[in-house]
Image 1 (cartoon, rainbow, N blue to C red):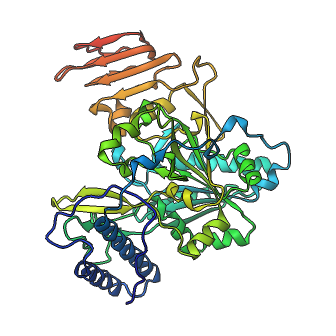
Image 2 (cartoon, helix red, strand yellow):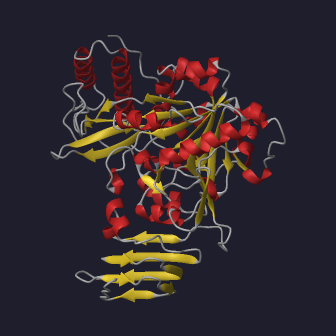
Image 3 (cartoon, rainbow, N blue to C red):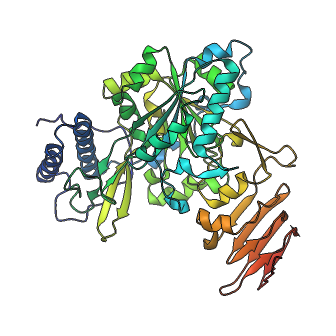
Length: 500
């Protein structure tokens, strides 16, 4: 099978020296990879989708080896903060005055739904985790769009990009929305085999999905998979013009009338929502000016010597929320012309057997450099409300937020419209354990900081204000009594209460 010559990449990423005896990028290595890929394709020869995915995987491995051998690396001297025109303040945008329903008819909402809930100790798609009042991420998303459709008498479709990990369960779950005023579509992103860190050969010996062997190659895969699914063509034919992309676990990522109108008025093909960094966001990707052009810079691409510089809030003041607004016709054109070459993210892993492997991944936001008039909009923090841990879950289930039509808004009764800092120890890491440690969600409207470590259980109707630190040392146990009010308190030692 002939393959086009690899063209020099205009991307960047930090490269690692190979550890094997093979000459990385040599013709022998590339031939061995091609042979392995062809063997996998031959075992599933009836699937055009699988063949297409494997050839794309092969091209990315070749590109990885090529860039590795050439030591393609980010030049930190060319990295600068974004030009003023690269990031527009949300407060300067004009909200729509009328005819908003006509604009909504041009919109598609797409949620990235490929992740599992394993980091929070849950089984199955993360979107199926109950996060508020017995409702899941997916329930709240459906409510948001159904409310929009009902209010404006439109039919904004919801699209879920699943992975092979989440597709089967998600297909079953969405059946319960059949009577709702919403059209739901799904498609799967690609499935790639991990590669051995030493040889760069795929560790898969068959197309069968086995734990630890295959992986979804990051959400940058959206563009080609969306196109290959046929849905991109369908929506364009239906008169849709824009897609709003966001993570399923970001409860702040709702359809915003003002941003959608700005997308239309600015004639932009790509718009990224960014928000101000805090100390909790120092690892987040950011928009930069790289040698005179707009780019998204991820921490994985930063040379080790400059990582601390990247993390400084004063230099890089914003980060990417992964809420993206993209023109559908522009996606079609770029994919059709094979113009999207996204910066590779090298994700190193170790299998259960101890084998060192690599996942080649890409980020959806990295495509910003390819779209015309692409820019960021600095949005309020309320549009970034992800649930990555039980600390996040603690906040959104509390009285800090009010739920209405699937949307969470900060309680106006809170004096400062920013969330408190919450840190939980290992006893609270998994959702099941976390839920068992709270009789009811505490009242935290006046809380600034909460740290809880060790074997601690909260009774019902507890109120936390100011800074509260609770430490149960190893072998100790602390019960916070029913109705307790902790204001600027440090609690430690051993306290057991029999709740009658």
